[in-house]
Length: 411
Image (tube, rainbow, N blue to C red; front, side, top):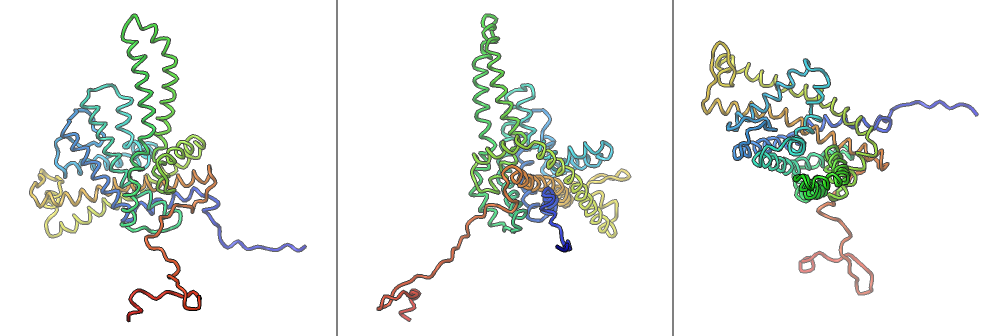
């Protein structure tokens, strides 16, 4: 039998290297639709933390890094300035520090930071604990809406290349908001119950010298309960973003999201780590590019205006200083600073947008490796309008025919 030569005309890189789907997350993250959701989420999150800080004023390091008793404009500028300063020294700190502060790991730490302060930090009073507790719930509340919108859009775009509209995403978020909100809270219920059992038994017995021996006997069972708490919290800390991706991709409830997130996290940890750190590296490169474009946009605007207003005047109204020139504080200068602050906020918005889109891609890959589900399978909401056969009736001979439209017979 003669050998037949086959010409290779194309390669399906998605089938050969499925993890390359993460590369498409950058293209989605910079889309105007997702940047709009991420920007609104960042602004609402920071404003909420600032309000809680004004009301409680715990006097500790704020996780949002906003200064106390500052205006909204200076809060946005300070937040962005510190984010930009961190990126500016990335080349001095090394690649690992850059990746650790990038869109994936950096956002993960900012979202988990308040819970870490509550669980691992020393007791600092009820005002500080209440500040972190309320702020953490506010962050969860905000991103249960905007994070759901981003993950839903990313799931449709990555899986079936469908472009949902703002109204469709709004309807989806309204229908799945409670599920997204309750999904990360469900594992905290058994953790709280186990903690109450330990503090109500070992904690009380350890207070007295007479009952200390009994507390020592019960310390072993308490450690067993603590191991269960640690396993639940570890799976929650690592896999909670997968819960929202599950709901957005499968259209299920919070219990299925809880089951899948723990299963994917513990069944294939090496795959999860590879996907996660590849996304973190890619997001860091993308953030540098976004910051470069934003910096040059601000510079070109100031440079163009300086030809008529003068460079010293531009620095004065934009908050810069040169040769002893002080910043202007008028309403017009404040408005200019607001616009610049919004441009800078887009840098933080990209971090959150890329975080949710890359996590959605990681969820599709983990589902593919664990459940052997194709990457293009995603839950599609039923259409508002359904099309079927027209109404039928029978004539005098009993033969079915299409019924006349209402009012047509009278015409």
